[in-house]
Image (cartoon, rainbow, N blue to C red; front, top):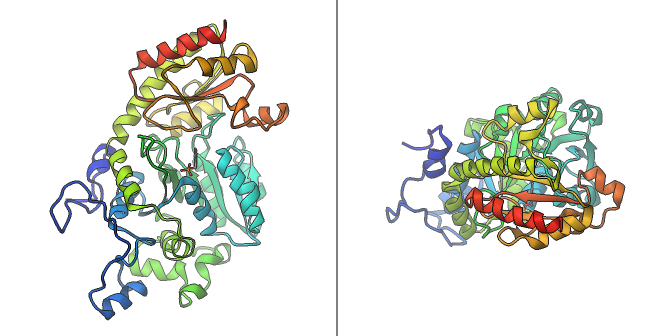
Length: 435
Ligand code: PLP
């Protein structure tokens, strides 16, 4: 039995076709640290290259260790197939480049990870791909930004620092009317949210965060939902509907469904064109590390969420804390979105505004003993950062406020230590911040 489990705890350990290593019967997934694979004969080689048969050619394009991770992640998301990549940044870049070329545009939510913001506002625009920004509080702003060159919508499920959950279904539904897929960066809330269930077409991860969990490896991943008809409005998706001169004139949108039984043209093209040409593959060693992380992901997410809930409640009552920004405390429409889309739990990220401004924020960080002061989220360890003096230090007052960061804002990524120990460290640091 393989590949047909529905519970995330089981999929994380058994999802996909891998049962034991076919060469040795090893149960743990081996690290296939090889660049290439011997062809059986010239016909076998020709079939692989012409995609008549799917199989291993060269590790830049596929690898058996990565394949196990990809199958498990696709199963976890309820998607069709996945593609592992060298980093979350590579995943965001591929996600767009797979649909948009010079002269095209995409519409993205304004609430983004800073690295994605830079990629979109600067590097993609230098490549001729315009990124139009839409306001996630108003789903209709995505519709208003569309023109005939719009190829995709892009957003994060749980973007920090504001931690306002994105209206996935509302925006996905608008996109589908126009043949525009919604790409969701779900890095901050694996297991808790499954964006494909709400209409997204592609899910993207920085596996560097919760999926790895141990803070050892950089990686990224795309999941193709297999739920989007790339050929429905052919002029909307030219890269899927016009002959590709780099692949003997293949038309990805029409070639793949017939051959594979699901509309996974997106993942196939990303693999055999973008990975082939741009080369940002995940190393088999890192794929192995992510397989180890994935095995305990559902268990860890539960602990992350319950610890975060306790910390948030503690902070909410603390006299030195002005405000706690946490999806579990959202109100009105934001509360509805948090409850609808984070049905598995409110996540482990929160922001606190400490009384006393910039100085108090810095003092708090410097006083922490157990929480690490790092520019990262999603580690098993609890982490903290003061954006105004680090990641957002180039921004002036108004610009800073627009991102949702105040001078005293501290971002916390709550880990899986005992909650009493997390609270004890935060408590002594708050005492010092106020002294
Ligand atoms: N997306 C989100 C939401 C992130 O937080 C990050 C990194 O912090 C990335 C993408 C980029 O991932 P990576 O650091 O693996 O390139």
